[in-house]
Amino acid sequence: MKKLLLPLIVVLCSLPLLADNPNFSGTWTLNPSKGENLGMMTQMKMTEKIRQTDSALDMEDHADFQGQGSDSKTHYDLTGKPANNESPMAGPSETVSRWQNGKLVTTWTSAGAVAGTKVVRTETRSLSPDGQTMTIESQRSGKPAVVMVFDKKK
Image (cartoon, rainbow, N blue to C red; front, side, top):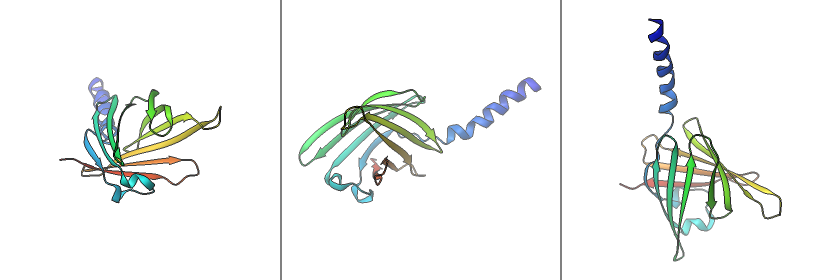
């Protein structure tokens, strides 16, 4: 009986942890009217296609800003290992992702404008309870957060 009880307890205790991690898979479109501090990005059209597994979230972005299209890919390692990514605004960056209270928190570290300095940005990705709205809050120290809100394409 004791041999069966311990594995059962481990499984039952793990279920809440698994349930807290949302799956962002799908196609998402930026809804600038719901965002905050977007500045000129309110004029941008953006689509994100996300594929998520237990260990990775892979995203393909397409943005159109004033007639100029751009595409990018981002890989988030969901096991906590660093990943190398290209940030549209900051260039080459190291990203480290972790789950925190049902949200995906990613730290982006890139070279600063002054030689030898680093810029750190924290990105927090969350999903609405109905799974139809994804919010990305991007925060740099001392700056107001940029909040991008995406609606799921049906």
